[in-house]
Image (tube, rainbow, N blue to C red):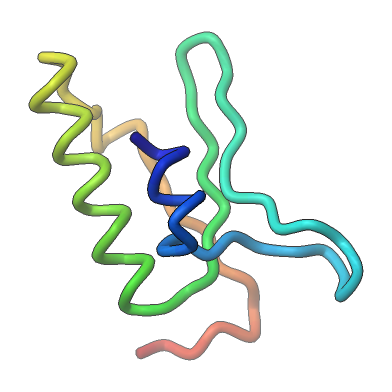
Length: 77
């Protein structure tokens, strides 16, 4: 599901420099790290992906163990 949205070009990842490929996610045994460009469209897709994950897997995302981090230059809006 995540891969298909990425392949469509709908989800924008982050890059460490201009010539580097975009990175959107890293999956671990029981954890996921999502790296997304901060914009409204990505926020919409992220919410949709997480909602579908909960519905289809029957698992609930533990929001107490989840976090979001932004770089210092991120606009508060």
